[in-house]
Length: 112
Ligand SMILES: [Zn+2]
Ligand SMILES: [Zn+2]
Image (cartoon, rainbow, N blue to C red; front, top):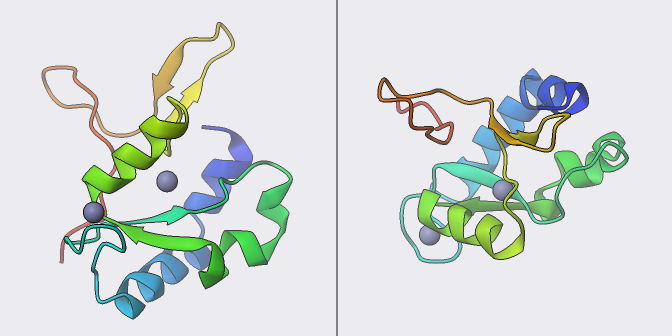
């Protein structure tokens, strides 16, 4: 993950905003009505956009999604999604948790 993105996703500001937004949506996926576990940025964050609070933590740019809808959103658009990045050789890499069998799994919102 890019340093600017990692810094943002690890910030208390984002964690609080993500949680507050999920609460505001009653943890319901805005697309299918399923259980929302993640908050998607409608306009994807870039190094430039990360400086704009309207885009990073403004509710107008957020969307509560379940994993299936989030996957679909990012697959429709590009192979890149939160947790993935291209390394210097152009290889797709994953920064989230790895299962014991080596398969990658998307980061999840911790269940309380
Ligand atoms: Zn959904
Ligand atoms: Zn997303």
